[in-house]
Length: 159
Image (tube, rainbow, N blue to C red):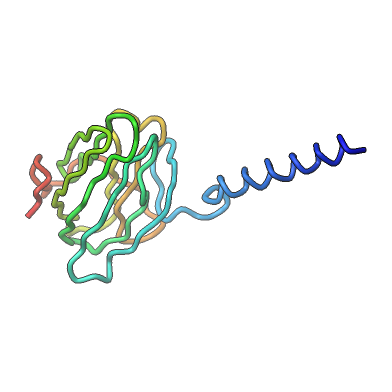
């Protein structure tokens, strides 16, 4: 009888951990991205007059994964690699590709396209493993990976 109780308690703990770990699975993500997405939170900076945002890179997700912004908004991003592997913050649409070693941080400036919509970002090395996210102006859109006609410089300065 004791073995059954221990087994049942273990089952409940494992089930609870699975449900907490898959919280995004049951909830609606604000935008659609192609491929796997390891979702780790959202942030709304669309109501701030001067937007600054920290994006942490872990092994293998970006936090926050989804960022609500205003069209044409100028953002200062503080990128932090909190993982144990090399990571990049890459956005073809924004003309940004910055590589960070484990423990490294850097600030960059980007400008969200004035046309609005959804702009994808990812780690160039680990995108296929779900390390991607998006800036978006309206929920329920699909992200663009392609460069826009009016994008930021390749240095990511954008201003």
